[in-house]
Image (cartoon, rainbow, N blue to C red; front, top):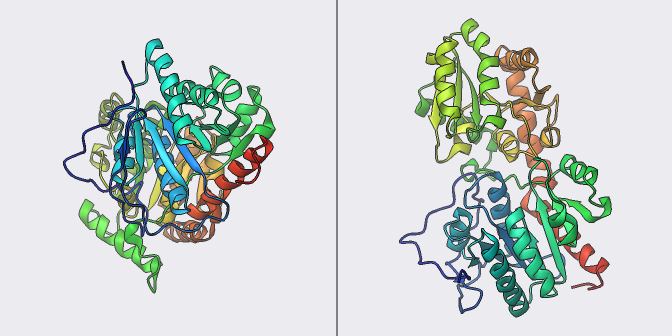
Length: 434
């Protein structure tokens, strides 16, 4: 029977990658559990801050085994909520990178195989027993598969609040996991909320909590001159990558998937590369078949020496500090944490005006947005920054200052918004102040 089961501890504890790490918080010793067995507790972090509202016992669920933007959002969210004093646990599949990171960071992780009708039925009853035994105030699901299992199990167990999160802007094929099983829905942008409303989800049942943008650990935000710290890191990264200060580096950090628009970006920048021998495009990320297509296209366009395909790189956020411009010609984006990360390191942005992207930038201040599919407009946006160092500096600084003042993207702003919705919804459902 595929029930919850503990996993063997990893032989060593790996630090969280730069793109998920927080500044100033040390990981607590590992804790893991199985739904029908004992829990091996580890001490809680001494850095937890007192919550503005009563602490809640929360179970998050995620079926995906990979580690992309959605999983980064969940991981940062869990860390921030724990630091507010909430008791946060995770339900995921064996082998999920999110689960391994969460366990290493000291969270209780419940493991469940998800997939197939038999596992679905068994999983529902396992979650029902888990929720009934643990007494969670909130069960927050993420993907369709874990929502079918965890939301159904939680409702059968009488959980006070079941929430379905939506981090994507892809088509919604079934409303069951948005209207039938959860009490409420949480999403990352106004754009995605409107997509849900257009598919029939009640507007009053949807909350919006943007992703967390954390300053990179190396940024020394409390130093006497934090902007100079960013500039010093920029010089170090450029030296490591082999670029001098006279060269202009346009960079892109994103997994190599068709909807991310890497091929569009390469085609848009190629004419500028031919005009400016010191212009370079750096792409960080891996994935087939897009990588092979990029290799062929840069040769076809005659810019192979100016287009650098670095593949996956640990510490990609630090690499962004070495860019002169961050560019992503994405075809669809629910929000886009990477734009906030680029702003955090003082890099101006060129992107497409799609989905929730306009909510993650200050258009005209730290970003230039081009219409989707308009290659000349994308080239023009890139050209404006490539050929104007003063504009790059001004827009980069504007984004950096925005990130230092935009409360809603901070861990505290994120948790306050989440707490507001959780407690409001619990009250609406008759459970009062908790």
